Amino acid sequence: MLTTKHAALQRRAFLRHIAVGGLAVSSFNTPGKAAGKILPVIKIGDKSVTRLIAGSNPIGGWSHSTVMMDQLMRGYFTTERTIEFILHCEEYGINTLQIGYSPKTRDALLGARDRGSKIQWICLTSGEDDTVWKEILALKPIAMSHHGEVTDQMFKSGNHPKIRDFLKKVHDRGLLAGMSTHHPDNLARAEDADWETDFYMACFYNKNFDRNEVRAKLGDVPVDELYLEGHPQVMTRRMQQIKKPCLGFKILAAGRLCKNRAMVEKAFAFAFSSIKPRDAVIVGMFPILSDQVQEDADFARKYGTST
Image 1: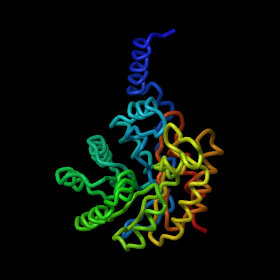
Image 2: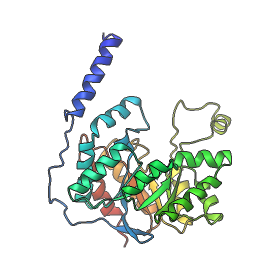
Image 3: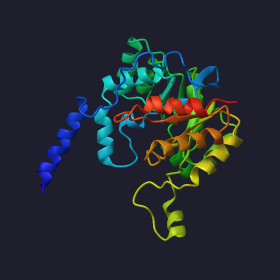
Image 4: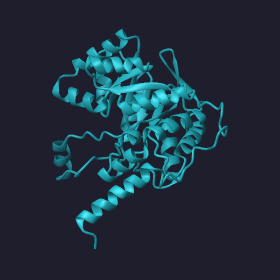
């Protein structure tokens, strides 16, 4: 039986192994395989955005499952691998990346652009200080979206007017402005108040549940995030009622619907059949064991093409 010290040493060795490519089974060395085949697009303002947008959680190490998975993701997505990932997304027709600002984001975007990338960047942020804003703007995003976790907290605490101030600030910088949320009612409140949004980001699962409400219904609460089967139907019905483009995210329940290819395909089919033709999905991809970029692009092309 391993001691705690030996177990910790093995975990660190495992992560170092990943960092140098030890578990990088999938390969991005497939040039030209899908060159020129852009995915179906929607319009957000004057920008053409593919209906499959590359998400950021695996890159940032936010698995929404376990700390070990967070570490695994961060160990895999070095700056160099993030650059390769961006280029690979474009190879398979994805023209937009949604990710928050960080030094790795900066270095990966600049590195990809040095290699010819034209990827469009939607910056997810909660309204940083002026110094960070300057760094973000220097990287020329096409849009900035208010972070969903902060959005939900602000609506709950009554500080949501600050979100509108954020939207105005983004527009003053000449960018498209969006708001992300996990709660369908927050979409309705922003729309009913005629906020200056160009788009919304809408989580398929309202994981930011009210613990008191859940305890009242179930007599107990889960130890971590809650993903209920009926949540996607509730959010997509709300998205259908919103005229502006909505970008659905966590369509795979943060990896919980990825047990096999059939399950993933079913989730993509549901998502595209349940959202508006002017909507898109954001999907985080972790191509450590298979080429999820190619797989997800194939599903988006199959189910996201309007007929």
